[in-house]
Length: 144
Ligand SMILES: [Zn+2]
Figure 1 (cartoon, protein in one colour):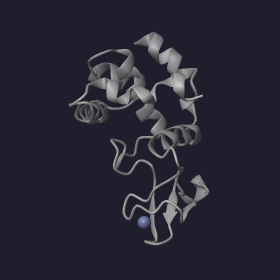
Figure 2: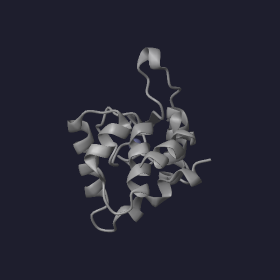
Figure 3: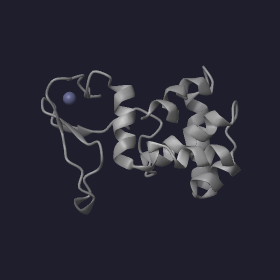
Figure 4: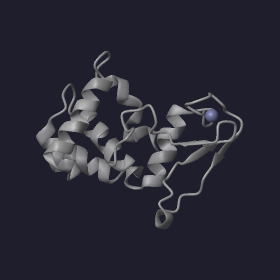
């Protein structure tokens, strides 16, 4: 687990903007798609501005006038954890083969036990049918 954490720290997942670009490239290989109406052409990217609480990866669908990010509909949805933390959890889970250890996640992510259990539960639910290989495209080797 420690060597995995070190490998992660050297990856491009340290930066929240890079994490969004990476996940968006996997989820939307041809560009963003509105999760509500399916629009793909009239999508505006909104520039992130932490001072004004404008999130990374925020998009606006012109036809339905709704904002969304790549997190919607994924295990990251409605979570306050940064996307980099989620990617780190996935990276560590993949490095640890077939199981997600809550105690190790808590220590490696620097989160509370409750948060670590939530992350582990979501990872387990997301991989229930096909195992952790479902998350394999999210490994560090493919992000840079
Ligand atoms: Zn839409």
